[in-house]
Image (tube, rainbow, N blue to C red; front, side, top):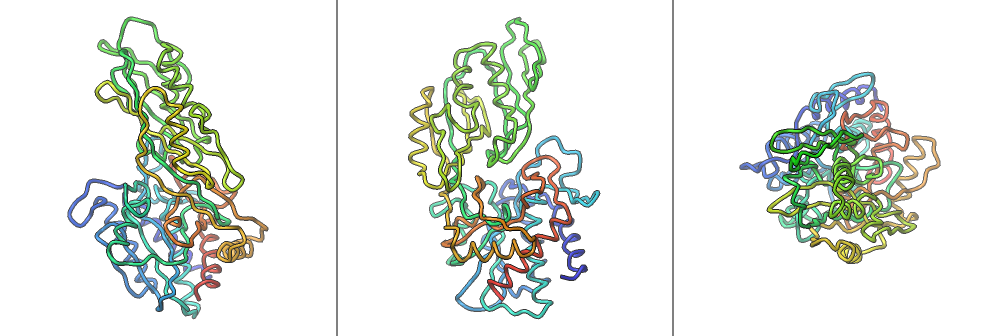
Length: 442
């Protein structure tokens, strides 16, 4: 591939990252917020300038561009929305800065960088004289990180697409996870656990999105004159009316909850030691990210262990609402998971808010093997397919897998402060998409 294409890819990504596309308040023509609408408009116009032939915006929830003709359609499902930046950044999350060979910004890895790698790979194939042998459709979702409660699938964007009369491609990929190729994605569920709050608790706040391990939390408790002291991860500030307990942890993607340090759980553990009682019970049920306290320490050979993330907490009308993000193995059903948790959570109610069914394709499936061949050919590795706890649009396809763009040895800053992509990895992913799409579509 020409070096000039790589330079254009880098420049476009820096521009793309400067659009704050966290889902916001709905406005006319922008149901997912103005920032997301701007991001969709930007990437659609860019794709048309790179050789795609037509585009469509579906009610502001999803857009797509097409190349080639025919009923046989290969889909590439990406998204333009991002999670909130959160705290702890040392760079501007909307700056698109390039520093020491790294491009910083929320979305650099998830999913703006990979999206542009695919678009520029197709642009390079066209410049090299290849013609598509089937229709290629690249979709740009606007609610992948937030979703909703749709009837057909996990995302309102995909539901709107279907209800508008559009047909999902029969086969495709989502460049929204890891290399070499992902043939299994765990099921993803959001649950709300409730219980009576202890009378010393005035308020409890923590978490920005359920799929992020929270790095901050704040609990206010009654100031009864007792002596509370700072401990690692919890700072105490005594005020006249109350005592403020601030929890500090480490962000991580909820798919890798064991790599984070949960600030909500830190304060719960602190209150457990100080008061015992209900906080001790809550701590015992929630402190293990592999859910042993909720009788859900389950796993399978295809995708590994179930994980849980305490993604948010709030105190409303004397009740604690605790929100969990669960990643469950592909051979288990959500009914089994909810039943186990409901039986273990004796403190109150358990409500299922959202469920994304697992994805699984056998390792010897032609799509998996073709993508794996391209990855190994470009990198010189002898890698095998993998399973992940993350969830991508690929699971909405009849036959789809996630393919890239995070490399095995690459630093994973998705959903974390200072999210960034190494330029070398950005270019390498573009080369892999070039090779794979040439085999599958040209």
